[in-house]
Amino acid sequence: MLADKLEWDAWSDDLSVGIHGIDHDHKGILDLIARLHEAYDAPHAEDAVRIAVARIARYADQHFQREERMLELAAYPWLPQHRARHDTFRAYVAEITTGTAPLPVVGELLSWLVDWWVGHIGTEDKQYRDHVQGCAKAVASVG
Image 1 (cartoon, one colour):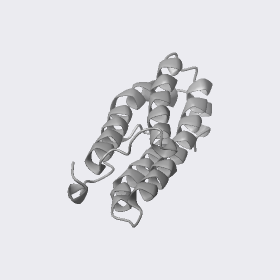
Image 2: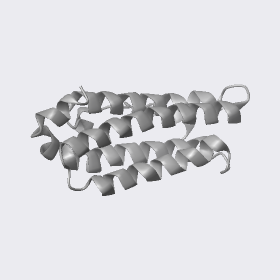
Image 3: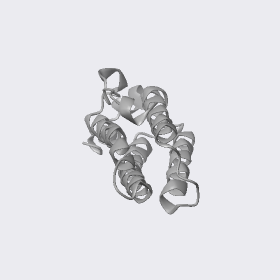
């Protein structure tokens, strides 16, 4: 994926898990990723990209906390595995934001972020949908 080719619809109804608060978070994350390419064109691009990735990381972490709390309330049996997947994302973006890893080129970073999120939402998050929707208290916890 090239930065100038990042013309994609960040959200499609196919990604919906049917829980408003979670879908809202997912839309926000995908929107931040879609705008990340602008940082590569900014003056002092490396700093701008790390800042943009840090913004994505903060938003994602808030989402992960809300989602994990929802899954706890719903007694989701695969929460430990789900949390471990979140931790892989956290670790990757931490390396980028702290500068402990070289900054990936725009296509690689955007591709990784899009692939991770679309894959995570489309498979792992959809796996909990039926279980959670049966627990009104859990759904209410994310709005």
